[in-house]
Structures are given as C-alpha cells and as structure tokens.
Length: 112
Image 1 (cartoon, rainbow, N blue to C red):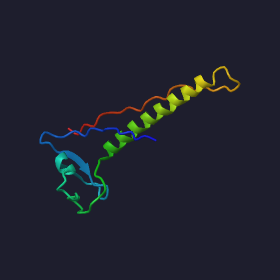
Image 2: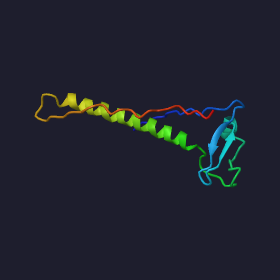
Image 3: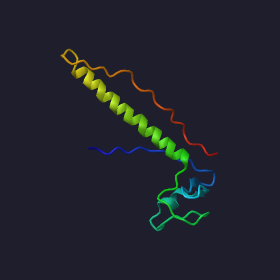
Image 4: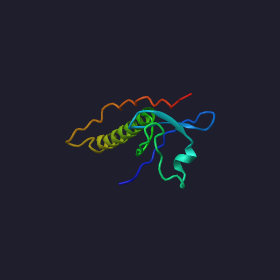
C-alpha cells in the first residue's frame, strides 16, 4: 500500500498570520506559520480557554481537505472500475463502470 500526501493552502493575512480555531472552545486566534512548525515550540495553547488540542485547523480547512480526499478517492475507484470494464469485455461476465462521479467544488480558503 502506498501513502498519498495532499496539500491544503491556508492563506496568511497582511501581517503573515493564519487563522486558527480552538476545537475545544471554538474561539478563533491567529498564529504565524513558522511558529506552528517551529522545533523550539513544544505545544500551542488556545489563548482563550488555555487548553491544548491536537490541531487548530478551522472548519473551512477541514472541509476542504475532506472534499479533496473524497474527490481523489472517487477518481481512484472509478479508474479501477474502468479497468475492470475493459478486462471483462467480451467475456461471460458483464461489468459497467457507469458514469464518472462529479467532483465536489473545492473552493480555496479566503479569510480576507
């Protein structure tokens, strides 16, 4: 099995901060991307509730990532079904892949 890595771009504001959201209290805050990935930063705490979470991605980021994943998975499945359709063509087994599933719209994130 192989690993597939995708990317979701989170835009920064004019001062270089990105918007984050605490999954525990729901409050928004901003952080510099370099601080989020810095080796000398051990943990990030929510400035509102003081609790730490595994990630602070906003609902928009998570929704976009899920749409990208779903679209990619649907393409993989459909392409495999097309291969089966060709493989079984002319044999005693009939197989149709059907119509290609439509992609969900992947709107870029815009916090400005």
